[in-house]
Length: 468
Image (tube, rainbow, N blue to C red; front, side, top):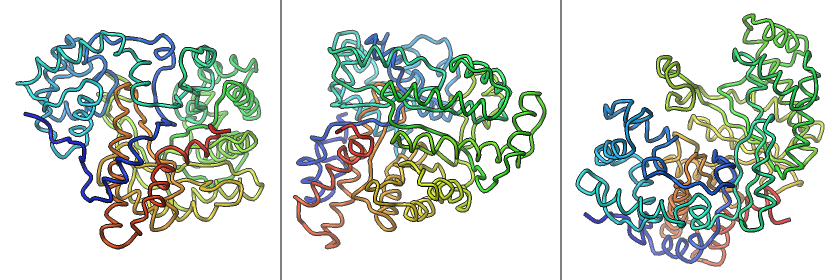
């Protein structure tokens, strides 16, 4: 059976169709937050088969396969690729209503020209056709990026990374896509992790500093920030659950570090003091370099201890956590703003109950240094479905300024995820088109088309200085 994804998929008004086909569809992609491996991009890796390209590392798919009682051997285990793919094909008809159903069929159409519903009856033909492309030059990692009209992408990188692959890519005149690093000092802030002391040794080695105190940590991170800046980095990334940035106690922060290095248990107050102090310092570093600071909030990680012990992190054991207190976020932003050291910032929440709260807080810290300086980021992770994207954009339009929004990202480890930008763009155009159809916005397609093009690409290009 042919799919339901035609040219006007999700475009339910004439205005929506005009906005998408004449404006959104033609815009390039700036994937400013993803988890692609820069070494794989540089080496232009090929994939063994569709299971390798599609299911490897994709915890979205792993979760729905587990929900359909697929054995772990056929998800993350040692089953042959074809067996894993067949189990995924069996699951696909069960996924109607889940965004993975849309994403998977968009990916089959856009990359492989396959306009059939995936199920056990079509699995053979889809497997053969997709593998034929993946094993050809057109199926390499770089080719897939170029085919998706990607202008630039930002990977996610630890401060201790030597960035050798980014440097090689920057020097490679045969590949026009900018591949930029992102500074993610998560392990330096996760002071309760048992691996924190060992990580500080690695950080110190990277910065050529013996780390004993918080000042040493700051000095090492500052050196690595400068190193990343020299490699073209333009933004940082931080992930928290529900942090308490209202705590400001330098002695408690020092005590937290002493305890962590000694293997002792920490009080919540001490953890908050350490994280507040470090984020204040890092925010100033970013502001001094014109970087943007991404704050991902509201996740609770590794809920399933058995799964974590067997497979580790980032395998589908994370969930939506509690909202962040408004006072907590405001404390961090305000401490930086009063010193004129608040960087451009992107706020994401995994808990949709925080949407209006974060947009309202962002509006308190906008200033003339940059349009849309404090962004409410795209619907993230468990929210990047149809309803979640609509809710995020409606809240932003109602409380903030939708036209300054920096748009979509993949947040993905897969080279086949770029149709998520198309999915977002269709939803955006359908939303704005519905306002025209309902008489809530003018049928001025120069005005609205320019706004759509800004959200799809130009806003983030300006926000991160790619056009400078």
